Length: 432
Image 1 (cartoon, helix red, strand yellow):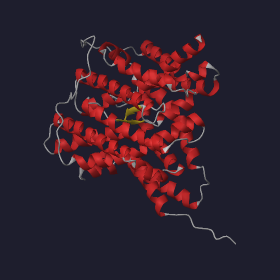
Image 2: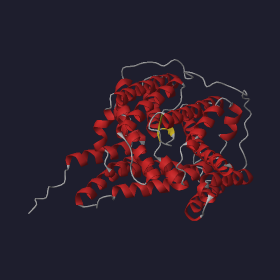
Image 3: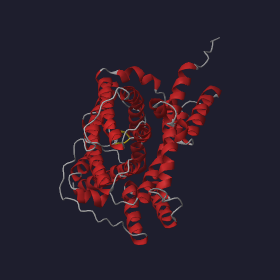
């Protein structure tokens, strides 16, 4: 009994660290884009932790009911960035753009809730074949691996050259996590992420030192509602919200497929599970808009975490979500734990992506890569990855809705593989 309790505590701690590490970077990125000061970024981080905890808890208990973290979505980072640029070009202040984003997240949530209630996702499930989900996973790892590697090398927060000491510590952390998960046995393997981050964090404090802040924070604070100001409605955000909601359906399917494959050894899910997951994704988007956070999606990287650590039980994930929600009410704790050095957090997250790459390759190669399938994959990868290397400015003359779609290599690549697979059917063989 004592052993089971200890195991649950340790697994909860590791899930908590994963939730934290996956959430801490986005508020800093958004804060930089919108020129926020330390206090505003701290508030955004508090609200992000709160919404991530609540969203993950709702999905785990009532939505798709799998241990999949709901985390800040890459697509929303793109939308935040584009709306900052287009707003400035149209004479809208950064505060005004943030107020429009609150409404955009709420509207997207309404569309997703309707999609779930009216079972829209059931009609498109056949589109998400192993080839499509494998392509999605692979492009996702390509898109985010660059961001994580930048963080590992100390290139974030204005640095223009590799920070040698930070990069070395990050690489050590990466190989500790990877080595323990691959070669260690028992608890050392199960808690590889937790052990790696603890060792990396302590080493970072010794070698580099901590960050001093002179800001006074209250000991208790309730996450602020509409912290960016009252949401503002404009008809131009309706198509953005609708198309974003449609695109996010692929996130739901891909994440549930990946997590179920990591837990059960094969994709195991029901249509009702997808419907509820979509509906609660809509509710979670509404919460993100109300609490002026960054909207969340089910993170497929959770499957990599599950495969890496072997943690397949749901309750530690639920407990970790509760802990993250509760600590959001205590700013001193938020400030303390958000002090995980960016290079260390990024190194641990990149290690979980190794398993996701393997999952992507297995899905793509479920059937032999003949000329038809190989060509479709090649076209999707070339255009999807190629767009990731284009500077965002090349799309600046396009309407904002086109910018959001065309500048996202993950969406373009996934859309291409879906389109090609539906249009290019395999030749039927005539039986003799």
